[in-house]
Length: 318
Image (cartoon, rainbow, N blue to C red; front, top):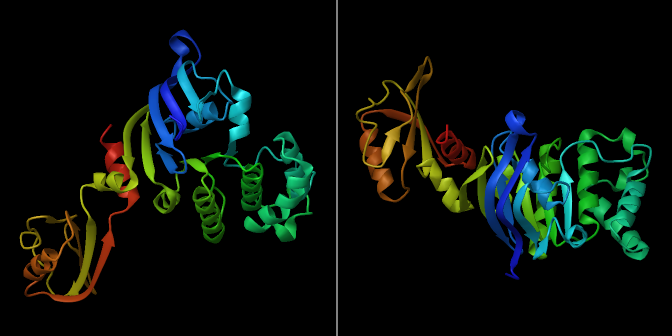
């Protein structure tokens, strides 16, 4: 289909032979619609980077088929490389003796970007990733985070229709990571399709439209982000602090509300965390009944986090 930027059909990849064979991917099938951001989650060794490398034409599938906008990654790799940029987390893959600006020029040439477009694009990309002041310094003087930002600029340079991002915020401080997320969001708004792998689940919460969960080379979940978060099994956590005697666990349970564990009692008071299955106006009345007769000093409500859904979904396969 024309609106499918990425398709994988029963893609498998193994390494080694016989008793030493390791299957990194096993008949993985999915599709990514154009102009969306899809996150691929999974524990170390789940097959995320292998999948990214296949789509980037850096590895061939052992069986099955993968394509970018209809171009087969194995049989039409040149077209795929013109469509997609790949960014891997880490410090390798740059020329340390060259400046950041010269690295961009070199990789722009390799990507087939015209000199005129490269010259025009480099200043705006350096500004976008916060490297304008360091553009003419040799990359060997860059910090890990600066090198990662340069990788991102190189990935954006050829104006790809597809961005394959493997741990893009690794090594970045919170401000740098936020800046990069903004740049990725702008790319998506411009119609770029993004496939993102990250152990930093804030990246996924802020950016992803859809989540694929890989477990030992097999896709076990393929859901919109909001539906995936619901896999945690509850909508919110309510943390209540007070002084005096804490509520009993019997009183701290109700239809749709349950305590995470016993109350934590300290010299300064007590703390109790409750999970709310579904948030709504009736929750306040139930909490009032539960806490009757106790002295409450603080109440904090937190929506369920992606990491809790991930732990529930991934843990359920063990």
